[in-house]
Image (cartoon, rainbow over all chains, first blue to last red; front, side):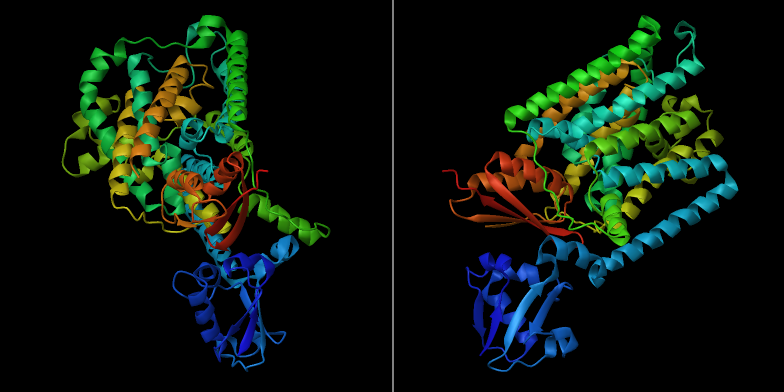
Length: 497
Length: 74
């Protein structure tokens, strides 16, 4: 019987045994035999389809089996077989071995192909309209950043309650703070005397803003992603999130139908409240920053009460040569998750750039236009609805056909940017939830999000992430609604196994 | 104990891992198999607060095995 030796770190899966005798007379049979014997080991050796994982190596009497006959290598009774998973060889081995593994390299190739695809789309739009090309580029950048920093607003709000973890919320606050400074400068240029006009995302503010926030906050937790989160998860291959987007489109259409009531009876009667007008530029800016800092401290206190925050650092190995530094740099940007604060900073900056170019970042206005377009295409006279009435009927609504509006390109750019980033990181996978009712769950969440966002006239991006930096009260009221809605959502998902 | 949360949407991978940590019998090791990258960010915090040590191994693209071991308290 041949003997198989296990590396130390696998021994807890082999009931502590360092070596076992096997009856197999061929390497392939050996793999089957030990997988059978130690089910815990199986996941390390074989993938879902039962194929040997590419980084698992066997050495027969010190010779790499791949240099012999692979899995068909015959085994003699006194042969010594050693199992060496490349990922297991400690920090140094991992860092230096990973990039040359075939299974891990393929996704980088796909990622590069996706990058080329994104550039081709860019070239195509650049020939039609510079503005559309620029929005596509902004979308790609937003998508790349949210995917890399796993920047999920849902989790930022939800995990305050669910896990008492404020890691992402601190990132959100960093993004709000940097954008507040940038937006204030831009708005000051546009409206030096704030009593003479308004700039930024200033909306009528009232109980509908709070209700919209509550609905949106509940919906995003139930759906497992806010407006930006749904889009980037779509790009990562979460199929349930595609259903959430359908829900969002449907929800914003229902709101468009109800707009005939909401607008004359409630929304149009509410005041717009803009801090620069009430307080002047300087106090509005300073006060916003102080309140943001206060919330930051509050979150740090809240986390500390629960025992603080821990991260798991992947060992890098020694970094000496230029090639080492390039490799580590690649890993830090394209493979490992960015810190939440870095994501917040990058998103805040991008938001400032987009405002400099045209208007602050937003997502759901375009989504509601898709709803109108779908209804119009199906024969429903959506152009007669008051909600779509700010654009003259018929032709103008059609000008919002998905491939010819900036907002659409921004959103699809976000999906595609996240898709590309996920491929490069090896994080793309079509994921189908095992429980069927998850689809109903994400659809319902999307429905609430679509309705809530358009009721408050902005989602977690336009109504919050771009509204607080606009020094507008509606951003804070919507944020308060998000907190309450996230709490309600947490109660719901705790009851849905 | 082994917990397979592949395919699940956010936040169920984290939620189920936390539930499993609570239920884990003395002396057992919990292995969470996931394809949800954000879990790698939030599970370590939850684990350490509950007295578990964390080890993460990448076993696929994208797939990770998070090994949670209860630290001896005495």
